Image (cartoon, rainbow, N blue to C red; front, side, top):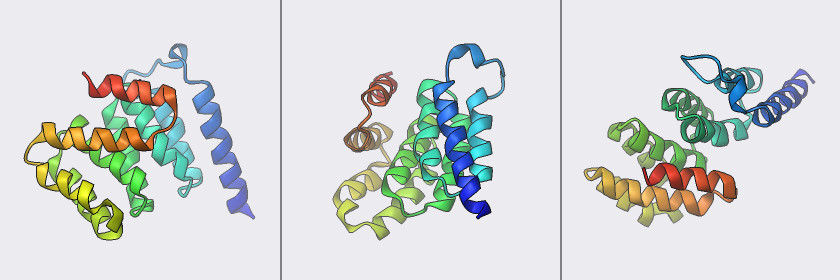
Length: 162
């Protein structure tokens, strides 16, 4: 019973954070204020998938805070190691935002083993990690194919084209 309450509370806090995410709440110089809410959500209900799939993208793309996004991506792929979208988003993040080819490689390697439909695309990325520009291109295309929200797509395209 307490698990359902925590899930409901986590859902409420997540939605409230997205609704409140304007700039006048943004006072912390170290991390965006939304990060602390997303962390609270992950502590209340660690299996709240949407928090890991979309919150790191928000922190990285909208708030331009890749350190905060990395923390949530790490936690998300810990709880959901086989979720394709989350792992692709995380691999892209660690490759393009953190310049961590090894971590991106490990994430892609794991999802390639789990998802046979991904093999040709992931293999291309996997082997092109020697070329950051090429792997970023593959991951960018794959992420844009999976993100349906037009506002988030616009922010991602802007970030990719920087």
